Image (cartoon, rainbow, N blue to C red; front, side):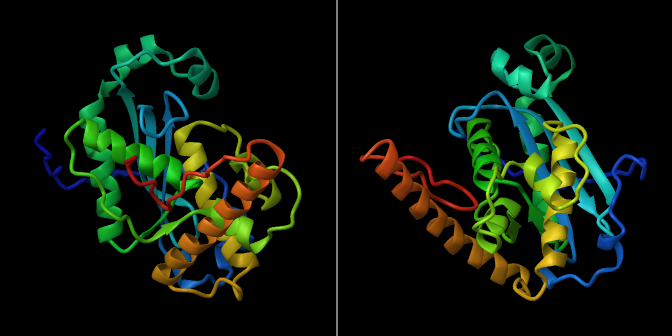
Amino acid sequence: MTIVEVPLFEFDTLVDPAVDEVPDARLTAPLPAWAARLAVFDLETTGIDVDTSRVVTANVTLLDDAGAPARRHDWLADPGVEIPEQATAVHGVTTERARAEGRPAAEVVGEIVAALRAAFDDGYSLVVYNAPYDLTLLHREALRHGVAPLEGPLPVVDPLVIDKQIDRYRKGKRTLTASAEHYGVSLTDAHDAGADAIAAGLVARAIAVQYSAELDLSPTELHEQQIAWHDAQCDSFEDYMRRVRDPSFTARRGWPEVPLRA
């Protein structure tokens, strides 16, 4: 298969500022260096397996200095396969709609990769909630469609990993919806790629404000820390699963991308 580089990407201009409310505390609070320029990214897909699932919808948004959306782009793809009912129940996109309104998956995947590459080149840190899911799935889709993938994306900000590290003993779920509620971020349309991406960015900023001293790091320093934190979190999860469910359980590791299976 021939791997091709995709052309430079131009973001759409934003948008209605009333779509996404930004809490006042996020507007003026000093932020660590890693939170100064944030792009956000989310996928909605056909399933949970990063190696086989396909992109259905996607969003990449650039946040301004106050955390409000400044420029964004949204995609609807025809994944080329049936969208399972379970996936449609989550994000609302049916196979019929994707085929009628979606663009070819190869074009969409190429543009997503180009948008993320442009954000990195422009000095943004990329916020992805549960990064190994979205970034690994995008990587596999790029290989599937002959698109040159992002290699070693950096710097990435994963609010899930950071929250688990910085507030490790808090009880309850750590889903995006739960974390948004905990940090006072509005998320009114969960599992819409744009709403989820922007909410993840605001959760990241809220964490940056609340824990500015503990997280006073450069983007690269935070990225490297998250690699270690995620690995330790995998150790903990693996130990738990072996004790209570399956003595042979092995966590699949890798942050911000999971390596290809051998």
